[in-house]
Length: 408
Image (cartoon, rainbow, N blue to C red):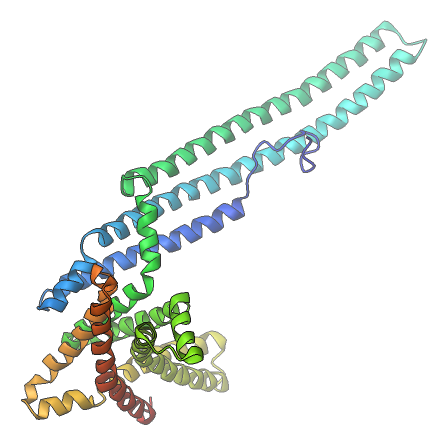
């Protein structure tokens, strides 16, 4: 069948869509970057949590050691290499298609010349008074026209073979990227990525809790970034958990059918913990955005121009968001302060770390085999629910008051 986009060659010597390849490469690059970030965060948090002791610490470290870091690292390498191969194929395909269009243009010129030569030859041979030299000249011109078109089509066939060979080489390289860098067992990478997909929400919650625990002991410039990391992971976990059909079904059964069972409370505590964990980040960014809008308006009114006003707004947003996060974190923590007053003032940080560790253990339980034990699951939900009600909810109220009083 003739390719309508290559009417003179009759076929497309270099099929393919560079735009689709570029889009796929971008997706693979983004996925590889996310997996690399997750691997580095898991590795960093595990290293920095060595001071945390006890059964909860052991359970969580057991959940994040072993296969998970290896899966994340290998998947990151596989996708990075695959993205690189696709980038090379994209560039080659663009060049091949440019060459193919050049051949098509040349074939068009030669096809036109061939039609003219055929017409001239027919006219010459039809004339009774045509000399032998005229007939020979017309036949020679016709032969040359046919050969010129044939030569272009031969070059197009060679391009097609080069395109096919390179496509096969890239396909083989993509297979090798997975074979050499992913786990060796057939299908294990798919199962690993499936595990990550199924446990993404719980993993994000656990990483948020671990980042929050490390933030308890952080000082100086490391504190605020850790707080934003913890809040951002909580927000991502909230979105992931809220879209989980199992959680939606458990909550719907409670509100519509009165089934306030273990599944309902587990779902409610999970979403509640994610929401409370994300509030500081949302509040800090909101304060930063408010300051940025004011700065942009002031810059525009002062005639500083759009670019300068945008830079001012971005700077104000960064500084105001960081200041607001620090202010929110410094807000009184009722349960911790009450416990410290009844024990000793220096107990505030260990108590805060203990509460954070409890949340971490609860969040990490679903990543371990213990998450399949209904009794252990119910106990973890009850303990975490008590933590949220007794500590995190009052902390959120206190932080909200500090947020309302804070003026950038």
